[in-house]
Picture 1 (cartoon, rainbow, N blue to C red):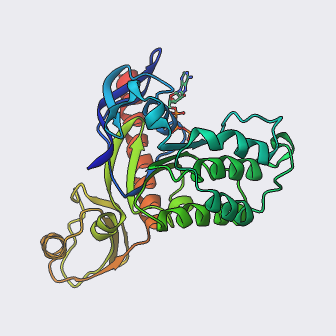
Picture 2: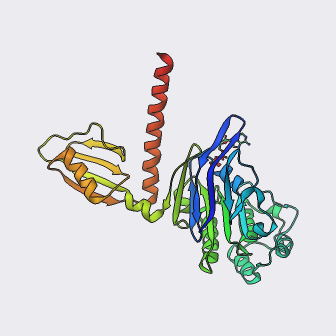
Picture 3: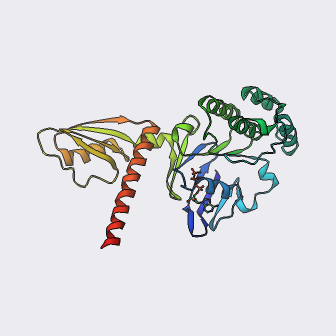
Length: 312
Ligand code: ATP
């Protein structure tokens, strides 16, 4: 079952199309990282899911309900923490928790206490006097304490120091150990969410590039090194899935984004005949750096082609 599902979801701001025909599915029990560069459409997607914005076209379903019809019942099962969250700054941390508690039948007082200690939050201090990291922790605490079925985090780590980020992640993991829940967390950096996510969805200019488990993603990416024998290499027109192809002397290196041992070796034999091929697994970070570089190169080629067209 999918806790979140979008069908051809599109959202425009005037003439800017922030999200384009998005078909995103987040299965129950998964922790999904929604990744993308600045302006890729992450915040817009999450705001539509939370019914803070209406879709321009298409639709989204959250906890089985159309996002435009999310009511009190669903909201009591969703935790939403965003980077620019409005908080009642005049309240102390304790007043915030006292205020939130009655809204949620599932509020777990023991968990509230554990997280208050873990986050080292000064209960009697006003929210307006907390640092940014502390404020984010207070927002997270007030969302985790009722053990929501779905937790949506919009760039929760940006600007947080490594220690606070670590506490934040541990807080989320603490709750996730206790039962099945679903998390959708947006970020522009895989390293920030690597410890949490078991699924990754990549947005590029409002379009979904892929949405798969981290296991599947790491399974299909390999750094390939080919040591050439005596015959000539045919480097022209490499397969579309080969990224960052480069040659140094008799060694050819590239990243295969659709690695499958037999097929990759066959493709190498066709181009390099008697070469020796090695394949190294890649970290998620390396995969994303490679994808970003390939994307940038592609953008540059497109821009150059457009410029030429304009000139001619
Ligand atoms: P970031 O990582 O920088 O937060 P993002 O992936 O969350 O970016 P969005 O904030 O969803 O991206 O923005 C997607 C696109 O929509 C961008 O081109 C942005 O300029 C545009 N956009 C976002 N909000 C508005 C708005 N209120 N009015 C006009 N355009 C907007």
